Length: 496
Ligand code: GLN
Image (cartoon, rainbow, N blue to C red; front, side, top):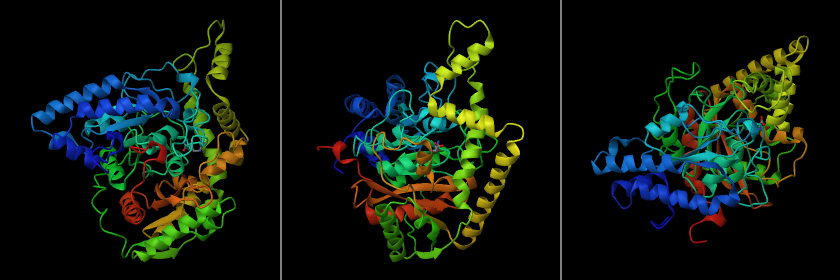
């Protein structure tokens, strides 16, 4: 990439080298990224809010530190424009979760994951579009209109973190954050051809991120290179006293990126590759990626995850139950849209929740409410938790034999808007990602070329044992050496 590339299309290292050498300032980086968003995002609609004032203020403060010669202490994301999924609180800006329910909600504090990027020197650029309350795989459930896929604007960017994936793929920002409950980082990363990491459950604090399924939700980065994702992981991971599930992680995720895969055991799961619904062009690319890893010195080992086929069924019990309980707080009194003019609380609740939540959110709430009701609970919730244990044990056994797995991320490449109208068909978008949330392991998407039929990005999913996220990043770095760095989507490339 030439020095003339737009700042949003540069890597962290390129930006930091330029800042340190005083080729450009943080204020220049921030202003040019803000200009590019203004010029290009009206159509793409990745951003719901652009935090220009906060960005300029952070950039000015950092420029002052650089002038004092204190760049090295500024942190691993010093000077890097970062944007956040709109379910993460950033003090003084909106957190809408793409829902009419929270249209006017202004964050009274900053989420730990966001704060950690700011502490690492990031320049906060804005808030990103998503499926409403993170329910969906396409951003079509956003109350504020969908985000377009930068590779083909007639197609969805994936979801629920569609804005986070699309803004990186379009080269508007180098790094964004998303959240993943069943696949919402990995699937949009696959559809947009970028790196997307769902860390092990507990690696990143969930404090200040609007909860969907608290036992499944995890925050992670999107980037166009494995090194950028690893640097963001360094900033994000670690213990937070405000989230009792967060763990004291001190790993340097960049440490083994150059080690190669020689001697690593990489698991393949034949049943996944034979799954009904897996597109031939995706299957071919993932198989090719596995054999390229073998050629690079990895040992491929077939493993079985016999209960993974029950993951979608278990997830669509556990997820709605947790969502139903988490969304109870949007009651029009303490939080959320309040429908005016009601004389009794019952009708105010009913009207506010009926108008505030969109159809998919209402579907999940009704499902969860039913599944947790007396007599039904024993038939669904309880067995789903038992299935969860079986799936977790499957992964534990598999990881006795291998250091990581390679799987498809999504069954197909990006689909067209409106193409999948049946909710249960949409739920299958996450058939390869959900079991990883259920077990709690780390999983990430790596672009491995484009499909022969669609010409669109295909992603391979690399899965790590719990708290060994460095394993998948190491394999991903090898894939990046083989395939090259994730490109900016053609229509958004500098000079094109
Ligand atoms: N697509 C899945 C769902 O709709 C996953 C969403 C997510 O990970 N937030 O539940």
